[in-house]
Amino acid sequence: MKSVQNVPILGVPILHTTKENFIDLIHERIKLEKKTFIVTANPEIVMMANENKEFMNYLQKADFITPDGIGIVKASKWLNKPLPERVPGFDTMKDLLALANRNHYRVYFLGARQEVLDQLIQITGREYPEMKIVGAHNGFFDWQDSQILEEIQQLKPDLIFIALGAPKQEQWISQHIDQFEKGIFMGVGGSFDGIAGVVPRAPEIWQKLNIEWLYRLFQQPSRWKRMLAIPQFVLKVWGQKIKR
Image (cartoon, rainbow, N blue to C red; front, side, top):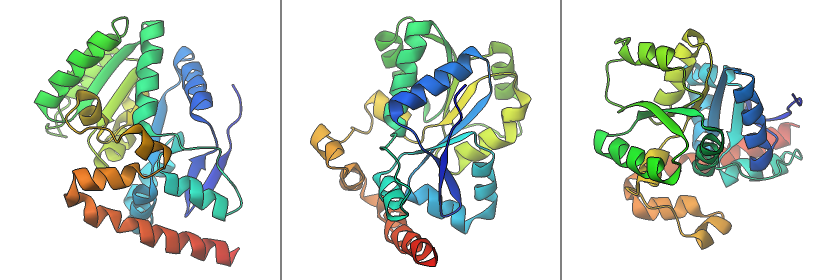
């Protein structure tokens, strides 16, 4: 297996990779049954980690932290350690579903509302018919209840997608991954909503212009407070650059 390189941004180690190479890397780990914890990081995640030591500890336990947001890629260039490209969590999840379809891998979904989860299962079952959806549970459950853990232990899925939102999904993976024998555990935020069609993805032109975040803000104005992390992130990265 190839060695990996990380670019540290405000104390968070971001994987230096392209999306294509990352999918290949995960495929190798599935074949080796090597347990893996994936975090998809944008500026909001990095700022959250800088403000919350417990959350930073969750991230430090991850095997790979990918550059989900364009702000992460730009920050790496300011620090003279450029990352090759964004590795969007939504696209990565879809590529992993396609990988599961080609290889008949076993998949488990955890998170979102029940109606969203039902729609997700219906759509992915239709689009990826060779993939085996072995189990699913919505995001409303008692964390002290061991039922979900026991179910995943018994089903032994190859890919487990967790859509509880940050920091809950990273906390759940960090606290429980040691209890499983195998599996790729990936926090995917609102990707279940996106695939289910509940929250539409930004048009391709917005994606190419790297302003998908602005489209999401138009769609969900309540996100404006979360967006305040972006200017704070920029100032903090420039502070890191000046120190160097």
